[in-house]
Length: 338
View 1 (tube, rainbow, N blue to C red):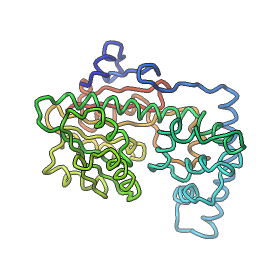
View 2 (view 1 turned 120 degrees about the horizontal axis):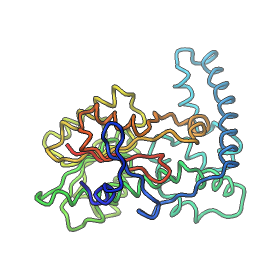
View 3 (view 1 turned 180 degrees about the horizontal axis):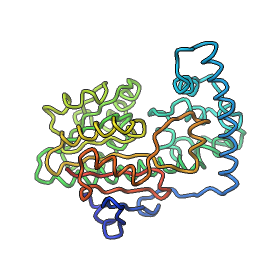
View 4 (view 1 turned 30 degrees about the horizontal axis):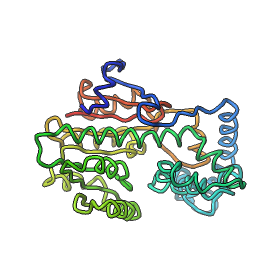
């Protein structure tokens, strides 16, 4: 198992199904852990409740008078992705960054905003109203901090994992629903002494374009192959490549139980003995109503037991699963060994 996991194993707790779970402290990986006050969370929930009323009313109107054949969930999704739609004057009307977080939900643009907020966005802010609103939501939200933490932990885990195949002249990784693949690229940059090759799979051509730009800027063009497609073609992609590791971060947040179990089982069967699968799932948290109704960002939330059971149903042994949660316990990363 990766070194970071080995360090945590002694302090890990065992869930009822036998899976080991560890909770990191922010200082363990240079993360963020600024818990919000009850007053802030109350305001956040009130904003979410108001948006639930207005957005559900808009969706019902569209359903009744414009798109009768569409489901309410699809209408709400389309409203959220519409750059002209406003969920709340308190959030996305006057801040372009808050609007990017909503319009780009479930895609690489929102993640890029969250991942790199401290480095890219915060230095641009001044004392105007837009900056105040951006700090109020994008900066302060526990979910933004948690997804930034997820990136940092994942980079550490991937970097450690690469060193677990010393007998291999070449280490091969496949990233499923890779987005911009920032974690994979950063982890590879940390290991210039290793021969690593990666295949990125994503259906979004803009994500593929962004990944390509980042790869070129790092001079890693000869290390990557990019495939614009869905996980349906995973077996075809892996047939000749034969990966030692498969990474899939964020995708389980949108896969119902049966679909998720089937996908995990397919991934397990594509790994060699002692091969590694890294994935994650969002946990239930107190800001959920805001994500659901203000950002209109629908996800499938699973707690520690549900997440671990998903992996076990997918074919991984409880003894070969390690769950690692960042300090908020919003995002859990699983490292599974075949």
